[in-house]
Image (cartoon, rainbow, N blue to C red; front, side, top):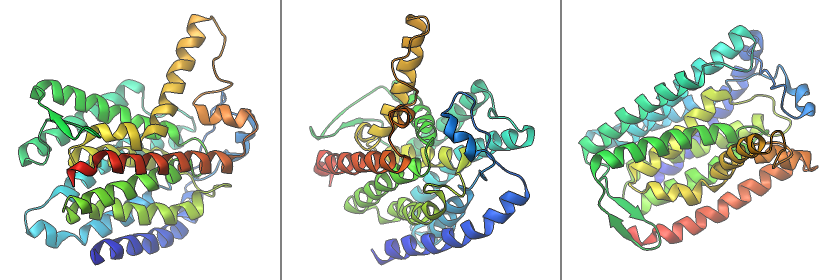
Length: 326
């Protein structure tokens, strides 16, 4: 347990320092965020705010997970697998950010390029988990405390769909200062507690480190944000969320702890469908749904606190739902 606490504190301090160092560097590199023309008009004032700030909590997490090398000596490489997956998604996000900054546009990689890279990363990760015996391939049902056997091929396609969907959902949530950060912190606290309760303290090192790193990043990312995490950070977080769920062999828990991510994604999908079916009418004032609340007059801080509070409650409910596994 002491290793976990040390990881949280160390990640917080390191991320705080790195955040201070990277701000002038990002400004010097003119790595400013481009604002979507279809977004809220008042977001135009955020144009030029440094992006790719997620590097600070990514590096702090890498450092603190490296402290878990003694665990790897015992044959438990799970935190490194989870970190590797998150990093791969983070690299995809970095490429997306790089092209946005280089060509001064809001769109980086194409949807097809992103999807293909994300599917490839997911497939490799799932293969490793299966081979190492970390993931059973059986589907655990929270609250009922039962598992259903699924054909491995079916499970792999299901898992790839969930992982790619989860990563992009977390990315979509990063649309208001501090929102994705504040929503993901309680999710990582949940995974830390779950890993410890299951006797997998080495694995708990990863989400615990990320909690510390994100808490420090929030100092710079909370409204008004001095820096954005960019796709580099949001795709890394998406990878971390789904990787932990599969590493603990309980992917359906994402429905509970990731409710906000799901609602954000569904609101965007419904908006597009409704717009096409009604030939131009809108279901929400703007999608994803955090923009709808902005258009209704909610301050960014209110949206963040409300969504984070809902996530905390859902994480508590998820804890009850999976407690039969402990």
